[in-house]
Length: 318
Image (tube, rainbow, N blue to C red; front, side, top):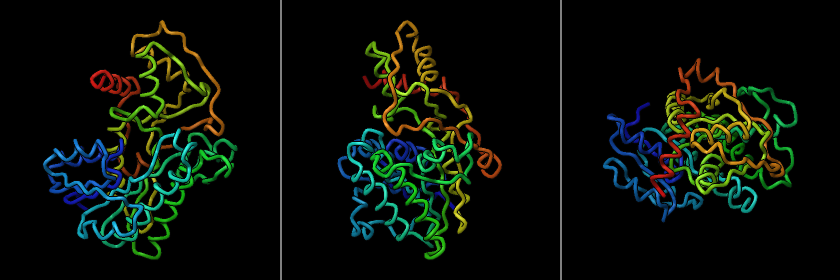
């Protein structure tokens, strides 16, 4: 497997755009095919990189497969519609946009190039809340959905679908693949529809307010996530190995908020804590021993360092 001609779907997303930039700095990479919808603001910046070739395509449309390059050395399948508020407000759109591109890529490149699929800890969140999964949680956890009537699970179902699609394609279409399950990846240029940048923005405006203070998360900085993602691609095979990427530093949302206030020098603000939205995941912390042992991967960036990078980018942008 080489990274000479990689293709990245969802290249205009938070993780996808950072991945394209990282690949562009790889001396062995000659051309990066960056695929996403038209009018994506991040694509404008990526187009300025000399190795990047932008492909503005709607991968929900089957005919877009004809416009993808036939010869690529590796595929990173990231195309999806993320953001908790979208899960509740546009569940059908989330489901469609997070499943159809995956199927298209799998059909196009199975047996032709190794494919990495980016999944999520959301696939097993209900198992944790129902007490049938351990914390920290390993890759052999049972995946489940607790309530099909809660639109929040539109994204989780799409990611479960993607994982099953990879395993099925490995059996029938000759796919060589691997899967990473991200655990609360964050970093600069993330957008405001996520806890850390949203909270930083609120504090900048003089307000310290959160929901679900007792819920726990394991936050992973984007740089560590990208390193693990590329290493996981190198393990692509017909067995489709799954790797949990996160940190073992489980913290409550309230504790994380207070650490952010400390880094920002705003411990004077009163932290207001509200109830979590319906269906919000109570706990989340991965067992990353498999990634350590097989990939030789370890997260290196502390929460304080990572938060500082978000704060600096927010200040520069505003």
